[in-house]
Length: 252
Image (spheres, helix red, strand yellow):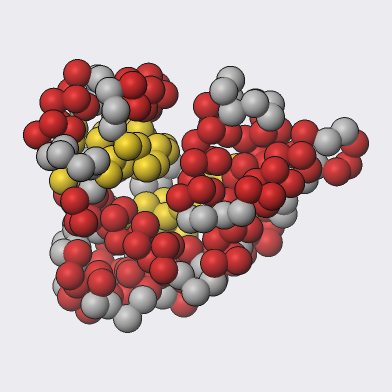
């Protein structure tokens, strides 16, 4: 699990410092819209929408943007976009398994774009289920310690709240893993204990990891970066085992 934890932390840093902030806003607005359309406009009763709004706020997305995305999704008639949720599975260089999460209004366009990136990077897009068995869906919460709190405090609180695993990562952040169905209850329990939950989301955790050669690692990281840049892609997950310093210093 350590490989995934390090990568997810690097990914958050990349998103936070990405110069293409407008693209990030567009992707999150799409996620907010889908959540609102499926479960309604009230984040108190729509947990998925609450998580999407939380993600939007974590990247300083303006409140007006969030409001417009919700209103557009819940409008009558043709005002709401019809996005489809799709998972793509494939292999990168060195045998690294990759799962791509997308929201699209044009399945043919998206699969063509994703396949093109895989092919150009020396990977290959597979059939549904080709690598999914290598991952488990989990809930992932990230906690930023408040003054006076340390990792032991958070670990004990997370265990009490029903967490399955706790990892300290860079910048003092703590990742808490749960069963997917327990994500909402654990987030609420941690918040009630006074912890600052900065994000809560579904993730794919690899059951086993691979550690190819350094050149192959760089190729996989470039592949992930190119896939993440596609407008329809919401998330990318891999079982690549990579040291955080290698990833940060890579050319992606």
